[in-house]
Amino acid sequence: MCLGNFDNQRPSGAQVAALDRFVASQMRRYRVPINHVYTHQEINPTACPGRNLQSYMVATRGSQGNMRYALLDAGEIALA
Image 1 (cartoon, rainbow, N blue to C red):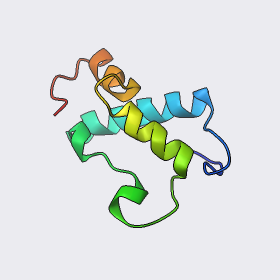
Image 2 (tube, rainbow, N blue to C red):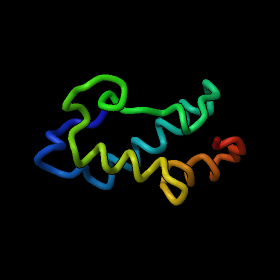
Image 3 (cartoon, helix red, strand yellow):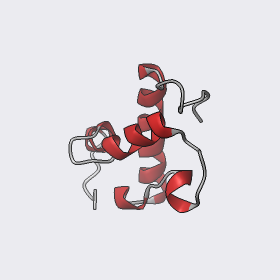
Image 4 (tube, one colour):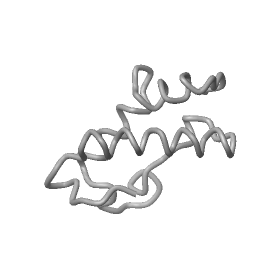
């Protein structure tokens, strides 16, 4: 969970680093591929997680994103 109003502010570096590590660990634990990781906004119309965190989540799941690197650092192979 990241606390803040991410329509008005950007998440801190510490917040997004912890978020990437946590989500990557849950993906490994439950064998969830990266293309099945969504924000609330992508499932149902909502303001959560806010435009600044939403844009980060899209980027971190991308081919050069930090979440992919977190998975690779842990030896994860299946990123599809």
